[in-house]
Image (cartoon, rainbow, N blue to C red; front, side, top):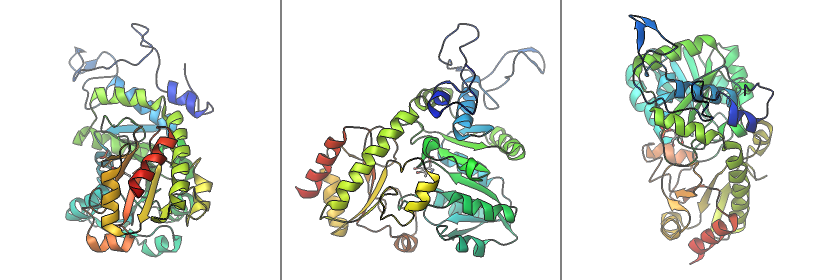
Length: 386
Ligand SMILES: Cc1ncc(COP(=O)(O)O)c(C=O)c1O
């Protein structure tokens, strides 16, 4: 069936971009595992395709699906979330200034500061939870504002509408990394963003079995620039990965509902635990930007961050004792993961910046999966008290 923007999320997740295969009637989009396509005469291509780096039918189906889920016109897929982030940065030139929210995935921080800085692109870290900081940091060289919300790992919530409104006044492009929320919980294009970025490796994939990234936009000019860069730089995903992601988006809404309800119960349990100093979860009324989260998110996500009493020793003890939660980097899969940002995902962030952001030795990040929540809470209980 052909979907329209008026269809509900679940209907679009299952059907958008996917028609039964015209030659066989197969209900599932086939894996067009081919690098090239036969031409009728030199330069005269039979259908829409000539070479998979430029376009491939399986990837096109995924891109149409993602565009629909984010309420966008165009989507492009990449070999990883970091490759998608790099593609946006490649729209900038030497001398441009980029504003980056201060608490971001460590790999994003590294890419801005250690790769693109060498090309003459200046990155300024800004605490975007206060819009006055954004206004103060913009100058006439500012080309791009990069927002991640909820942020990784301290789960700050940035008011997307407020930041994109300021950016528009100054003719600055905005890109929102929507990885933690997923398209089910938050749609930044509807809140004024120019581009949405995803690490599909996380909730969109949801099964910890593939790497991928995506960029979605409503802007034809931005899309054309990104498409040219994608063709020229070549960081496209494999066709099998595209198939896996198409299979995963069909259950995104159902998985996210369970991630959110489990995470809320886990956060409430940890909030009462005497060994836990502080719980950060956007769904708790104690979260500093709880009202912004309520305004722009459908629910509050599957990520929970805690400060343990007892610093590194207490964190290490807990992380070594968990049985169901797996000690691993990454997030967003059906299985629950737990990690120590200062030593693991954010090790590449300079220590002074980590200290400023509160990424301390007692900080532990949980990606709450979709197992039975009573089992998850029992696992945390034994890890914290045994
Ligand atoms: C918020 C966020 N954005 C981007 C990335 C990078 O994605 P990938 O690992 O798919 O390159 C990650 C990875 O953890 C992430 O957490």
